[in-house]
Image (cartoon, rainbow, N blue to C red):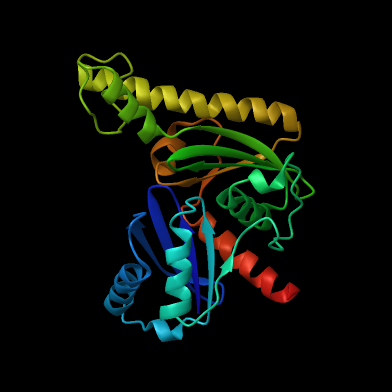
Length: 257
């Protein structure tokens, strides 16, 4: 079995594959102070609750956008799973040409998402990942990563509004009853929710014009399910897109070695 690990700024997601089948996913808070032993304790507990044993894992792959956490997760794989993990980086054979000015600047999660999306659609694409930051990535019809945009995530926007405006409360990120709201909480939710829907459709619309060939639009990440039903541009939501990209890259990396 393959353990795919996506280390994000807010959460770290573990996905367990048997062949091409995703058996289980687990989401843990990304804690920069957690040691390899503490990560191992959490992972062993999750496996035990699922009736699985870590000894069944025969491969591991990691994508990380949080450099301080990567050493502990890699040590988890080496010391507790007895595996040398594949860490996605600029030299990893992903099968996708990177047309960014400096390919080393592209976050591993963005490339992983692009690989998974193109493998599924085989056409030009825009991939939106609703994480701590929201990323928009464009892939050409020939399967080239072209670049994209990065915006503050909806959670960051909500926290900034609460922290910087002294009379405004902290609110739940949710769709309010109306855009013309009748109280402060709903007013804040209306600005956050509908403002973000507009941000998404505005950026995607510009990217579609630049691509010029009617790209498909896929969304992933924690808030994709909230935003996508109210977007006019998102075609499909896949919460496991990043894990699937990790699986594909692991197979390509193994085939290239």
